[in-house]
Length: 164
Ligand SMILES: [Zn+2]
Image (cartoon, rainbow, N blue to C red):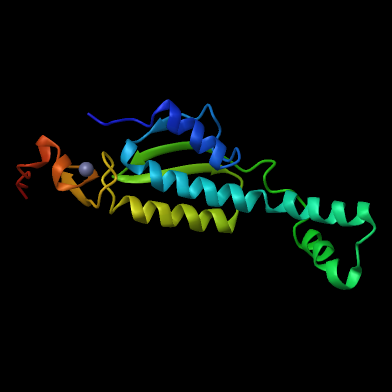
């Protein structure tokens, strides 16, 4: 029996990710991966909100009359390179276990977030989905999961002997 992500954890994930992980998201994975998801969410949220931060810096400088092209021109350069606020449409749509590993699907493509998610998937293959301790990828027949020694599923204790 998998322990699911709790209501309190859901709220924290939405808060820490600054909305990258929406409140209504349905999780199909165990509680052991909570810290991995929280880390991805926090970094994604920080990355996606960088645009708003730079916008805020530029607007405050201009409003106060302290904007100086020589020192603050990097903000204009930033908006030349990043014309659209990436937080507008980039959002997680599904978080689940698939083939034993963590999968985080999201709308829109962003190389930074692609990298974060690849890293999270790699960590999930070493993290017990039940409790978050160091785990190993295990299989029984076609079913694959990751667990520590305390959370071995009964059906994986006796490995299937293939006929072929
Ligand atoms: Zn465990």
